[in-house]
Image (cartoon, rainbow over all chains, first blue to last red; front, side, top):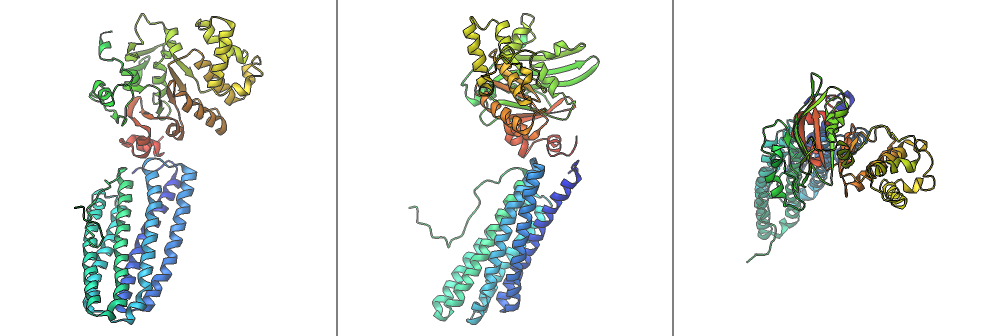
Amino acid sequence: MAAHIVTSFDEELGNIDRLIREMGDLAHTMVTDATRALFDSDSVLALRVVSADAVMDAHQRALDERAITIIAKRQPMAQDLRVVVGALRMAADFERIGDLAKNIAKRVSAVSEGVTPKSLSHSIDVMAKLVMEQIDEVVAAYAARNAGRLEALRIDDEQIDIQYTAVFRELLTYMMEDPRNITACTHLLFCAKNLERIGDHVTNIAENAYYIATGRQLPLNRPKTDETTIAPDPA
Amino acid sequence: MTENTRLEATEMNMPAATILARSDLYHMPSTTVRTPDAEPRSAKVIARNVSVFYGPKQALFDVSIDIPEKSVTAFIGPSGCGKSTFLRCLNRMNDTIDGCRVSGQIALDGSDIFAPSLDVVELRARVGMVFQKPNPFPKSIYENVAYGPRIHGLARSKADLDEIVASSLQKASLWNEVKDRLHEPGTGLSGGQQQRLCIARAIAVSPEVILMDEPCSALDPIATARIEELIDELKQNFTIVIVTHSMQQAARVSQRTAFFHLGNLVEEGPTDLIFTSPGEKRTQDYITGRFG
């Protein structure tokens, strides 16, 4: 893309892009640390995640201010406008990812008090890895403005939903086996749900990034197979 | 004109699909990127392969476009891109320039505006024009508006003429500011008021199309906002074509936008689309400020 006649406009847009990528990297670190803290019962690492969330919030505010200033000052058009508006929305999703990671970190002490079946950590671990890959990929695909990869990401979210369903069933089984597991398993269920929600936010980010790159909105419908959602039988 | 059959005007209330199917615009060989409206309106002005030469120099290359009725069409593009030249073709203002030659076809409501039988003065009454710099006659406010209807014989009596002047000034949102000083000189008004006086003068002869060549570029933001509000109201009854250097203005007031560059019509489509995701790289570069 050719440079703007006004070079400071390019710098301002570059700053927006940089902040988005920083927020993406921070979100990745926070999710990694939160799940690591959960499996290792590492309360120090959990505290670090909680304090990182303040940085995330500060990033979002900085991005909001810069984006609003650009709109007021430059009245951006076409793909410039899409970058600015898309960044505002992506920042909100990254900020929510930060909140959800913080929520996982806050449950670390509660989970480590109970008895956690070892195999459980494994299935949540698989889910966490999927989520972290998704965050990495969405940041990279956004930076490369790769519409195809962004569209694929939305479909890949289904894997996280499937894994969440598996974790949900497994946790139910453990709770039925031994009521002493209930406290820890309930916290773990919330953690799994948080990871699933993070996946949804990544999907939103991918949809926004797709709009920035192409100027077109992805269709509303996408495959959904979260079987834990209770829906009445249409028959 | 033999091509007249091909340039048939679309009728009122025709279904959108019929309008599109009848228009040859989307099937003709052309480099212009075109996007039809989701709900197209029938065309008031149809231009096909219009080229303009100033002496040996070609200023406009094979421009083809439909101007939809009762809506605002904006022409944008850098200086010297041909947008004003094309605008002036629509009421044959280029006839007044020595050495200027126009080729191609332009039809207003299906009739050829270059037909030998056509009265140019009558054409310009049907296709009015408002210029960049407000240019009221050095006469009273009343006379500025009354002049057109009088020479075109639109008023049978003094009462008739008073009625036309009052309603034109009302339509131009100027009435309340000038009703007590109609016989003071028009040149004594502020710039924004003068421009609204010129719009009142243009609509006094009941035109069907109003061409506006950068009507706000000499006005302050408040006066500009008044003119934009006025354009929005006028589109209920008139077909409006506006040339503007302000992209924000084009985005605000128009329903369709046409982008000209180096004498070519590069892209035309719904305004919403042009300013959020244009189809042509040159359009994108221009509206985002990447070349001048």
